[in-house]
Every structure is written in C-alpha cells, then in structure tokens.
Image (cartoon, rainbow, N blue to C red; front, top):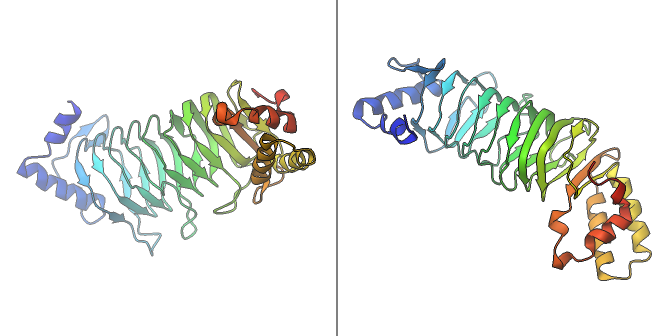
Length: 311
C-alpha cells in the first residue's frame, strides 16, 4: 500500500474507534485491542493518526511507571509530541513517520528505525532523570529530519546517521560505535561538559564515509574515531593548550586584521570548560570565501595545521 492508502484505512468510523483504543493501549491505560494485524512480526499501525498534541507516557514523578512499546510498525504514522518518562521502546519502526516534538527522560530506545522520519526535537536525549539515562541503542536515523534537534547528556550506541540535517547537536553524550555517512551539514558534537559531566574518552565513531560541512567535534579524545580523508578537515590534539599557545604566539605579532581575527578565534575555542587532554576536529569550509581571505592560511601558520590536514 502507498503512504496515502495506509493513512486512509484509519478514516472510517470503526477504524477511528480502533485508533482511540490503540491510543489507550499505548499510553498504558488499557489492554491491547482486538482487530490489529501484523506486518513482518510487528503490530501493524502504519499510517495511524495516533497523537498530535502533547501526551505523557509514564509518570514524571515515578521512574517505575513507564510504558513499554515493543514490536510496533508505526511507519508513516502521526505520533507527535510524545513525552516518555522511564519507558522502553524496542523493535519498532517509525520510517517516514511524523514524530515531531518527541521528548525522552530516562527512556531506552533499542533496535528501532527512524529512516526519513520527521524527528525534530530539542530533547531527543536528556541528562539522567531520577538516576536513569536516556539511551539510544542500535537505532537507524538515516536521512531523518533532525534539523535543529538536540541529544543532550544521553547515550548513543551503535546508531547510524546518514546525511544529517542542519544544526543537529550532540551535547555531552556518550557516543559508542556510531556510524555517520554522507554530508554532515552543520553537525555540532560537543563533549566539553557544558550541560553535565562527560568523560572526554566517551566517544567512538566511524566517519570514513562522511563529509564534514561546517561541522565539528569538540571536547573528546579522538583516538577511537575514524575520520574521512577530507582535504579541508583539521584535527588538533589537546586543543585547549594548542590554541592558547598559538593565540599567545600570534598575538605578539598580529599586525593585520586577519591575524587579529585568528587570535580571537583561537582564544574563543580555548575557553573552559573542556578537558586539557581533549581534541577538536572541524572543516575549514565555512572559513573560506572572499570575506575570509587569508584567514585559513593565518590559522594554519599559527597551529602548524598542514601536517594534520586529512587525518
């Protein structure tokens, strides 16, 4: 069936009653209703108009009162503004679904797919809630709409990202064996502990098939990171000290406006927090163009970057 056909099958009065019963079931208020089919071993909820306004699942005051979503196919469904507390979502498919405004606290999502889903949210991952971390494990985010979305203080393990949307942010997350492919447009990965403490060693990922475009990784040790062979990609080891030293050296002789801008750039990046042993990685693309003429060259001279480019 087409996406339109999957949605239309929920339009008649009997189907609409079933939608209400499914909503009660998935919010933990009733048992699973009769009359639901299966597709590839999952409950067939494809195209269902489940929620459009905020719905709380679990109890924000009780970490033991979460709900369990298991083996559901919600491809193409409308499941917007869901707030999960202390819950578990496993073996579910959300491909092409509208999952706008999803927010998670102390919730684990595992073995799920959000391919081409609209997943825009400011709280896809949150710091520990009542001792429970938010965990995404073996989840496919390939080509999902994640524009201006944020994972903060959560765990991402064995997840895949392909062609990330603009301004996706991973803030102080533990990232374990994740894979990034395609163009990464303004992907910002920051482990400096701005929101909560995180180990600078808590990052391992494969970027070999990715292209950094105005993207950066800051605040993690990059020893377990595989980077692409990209000509304008820069890696600076132990960046806080490297940037401070370079800024001090350049400021002694900064006679041009470009050199003064480079000093300000280096001093800004070197500001705490940020573990002294941590590294940074960024592409020079956004620093190119006529308005930044000479900036890259001055930056390279200050840091001695030519030997590090492409690593």
